[in-house]
Image (cartoon, rainbow, N blue to C red; front, side, top):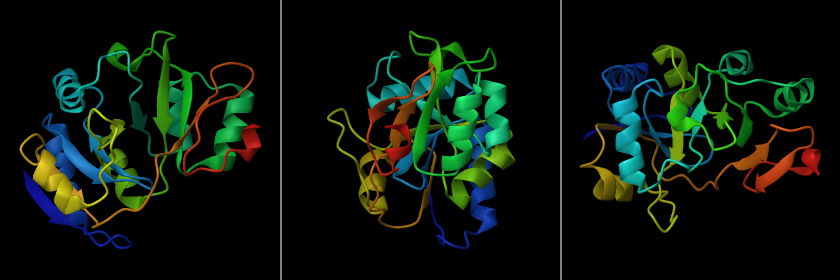
Length: 203
């Protein structure tokens, strides 16, 4: 695994470009978000998606979210109601995963049984730049094990997962929590998980 240490406020673009090259070639990366470190791949690459399911030990019914670079991009990959748009405009970019009805552009491997998908626009320059430069959304699933133990220290992550991924972008230790997950696929919002994002708007 290639390992690059980035400056969190002013990340070196050459390292981000190396990560994008790995993604374009169907590889798997680990990268920082505004919450935790995440496993990432191009969502349009089925082999890469399969690899991440195996790394995570998840079955294909598990909701795995993906990163879009901005709110406008979300409309390509999901059906967005007026309420959902207003809610997301108020909260994004930020530490939220919004569950929305999937569009046909999203690979069915990422659909839940209800034909919904989880979408993120993190408040993190590294993550957003990756998605913009790749040109496709990036899978976003937290670096954790089968017991849902999250890993915050990049050196520990390298030791545990280094032989399973192709590249890691490190900013040291992240002390975040998981994102808040809000289901906006129906008329009324449903809070699936209360994480780091303030959920008072949806109560």
